[in-house]
Amino acid sequence: TYLFCGAAVAEYTIASTSQMLDPAARNWAWDIIREAGLPKRLLPKISPPCTVAGQLLPSICSELNCQPIPVILVGSHDTASAVAAVPATAPRGWAYLSSGTWSLLGMELDQPLVTAEAQKLNYTNEGGVGGKIRFLKNIMGLWLIQESRNTWRRQGQNYSFNELDALARQAPPFTAFIDPNHDSFLAPGDMPERIREFCRRTGQPEPQTPGAVIRCAMESLALRYRQTIEELEHLTGDKITVLHLVGGGSKNKDLNQFTAEAIQRPVIAGPVEATAIGNLLGQAIAVGEIRDLAEARQVVRHSADTDTYTPQHPGDWEEAYCRY
Image 1 (cartoon, rainbow, N blue to C red):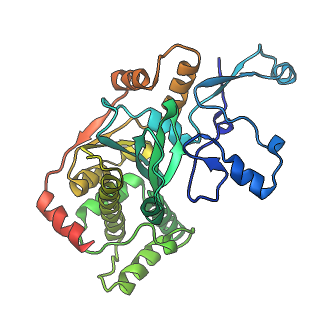
Image 2: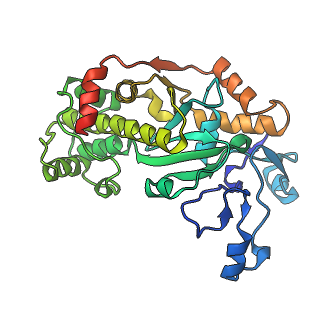
Image 3: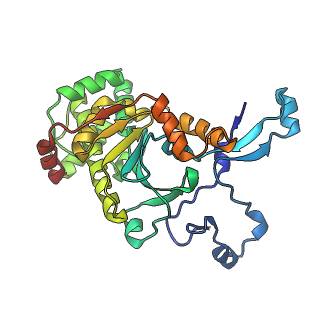
């Protein structure tokens, strides 16, 4: 039995040169810390994921009435474990999308990519399993749909997610688009009205029905994913041939197909519980049951269900992307 302890691992998140971590050395930026006058004793040793931190304190074991349990550091926070569970077959040539309330789309790199252009485009370098860097962008995700559903529920229309997907399939395609990352969509509230307001402000037809609102949100997300993949290829110089989509959002088959259409690449969806799987694999690596990240991904490929989506209407989506 092992205790999950994901929050104990420091992430190497570099958004500007003023932060306190050195992205290349994977250690504290001691020169900045000295300049800030901070005492060195306040900063603990940074421990990598997939290591055993120690045992539960005897006092806690006594309270829980259990034997000593190893405390294991895994990929943290949750996205690092989710990315570790991506069933990729090669070290390069793919991107990942951790899809949930937020979408986190990026690539695994061996070294941080810290450039002025990457900063301008709002990419981050975050620590991953196996010494990898998760070079990624945060994108608004299923929050647009979740909060729309909450709004309609407050108005007495209690749609299930499956019902909303069915309504979206019946709505006309490519009527209007939004920027999913616009500040107006961040806070809780009347999401359908905010989507209509964005469309009014940008001179587009307003989606009136629930199906039209959801279709607008899903098509806009898929097209934003396309834009982000093109940015990733430009910034890294690597070609992306497939997108691995993991997390709860991988259950949305319509959005998965929209994404494949928009990015004009295959989308491999699954596993759904990628975070929990990656957490378990990190523990297995730490105790020597699995050799490394490559073997962990082989385990995922042999044990998790995935679905593959391929583009079917590239011409229609190419025109939509130009408009977007």
